Image (cartoon, rainbow, N blue to C red; front, side, top):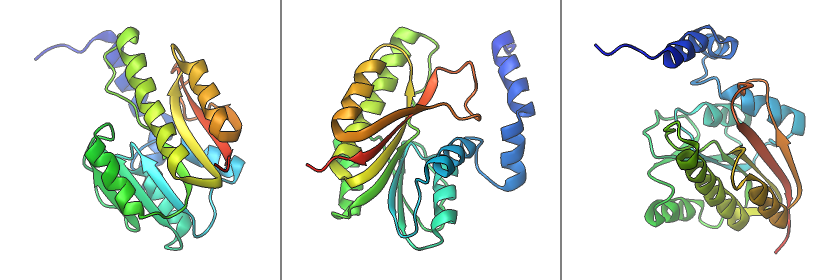
Length: 208
């Protein structure tokens, strides 16, 4: 059996002892990522009863879980991921690659013209550890999510997306400001300090 590298071993040790991992297990959430959404959503009052929301990069499903529990059947949640996801009551799930037009269109068709209140994106590529490869891939997914939000979010609606700081980051923030009146960056407590990830919160979708 191949030995674990020191870095992977350290990550596993940190993961198993992580306060948010332990909390998620105890509270029945599918991943620690739920606490990133919870912190931002509560501080910014992102959710409201009856809202229509889209969760991109949803698997394993903690964000969809959180949304569905909040809405209690009063709204609609549509989730998408390239990976399979165990069903969440009250959530319509699409399995497929968001980069593919047929999958993108499948999600659009399911929305059937509904005005979307909020688009969430926690999408990220499989990381190789090579920044020159990983950053462009991550930015491409973030750009697709922003493009989708710009087309589907109703005037006044919001967009929350994971973004990795690096090449293309500043241009991405500027692009978000074209479509939304307020764009801010958030670093929730559950986001590991050494990670270059931040969350871009764009509110006040401009009327076309």
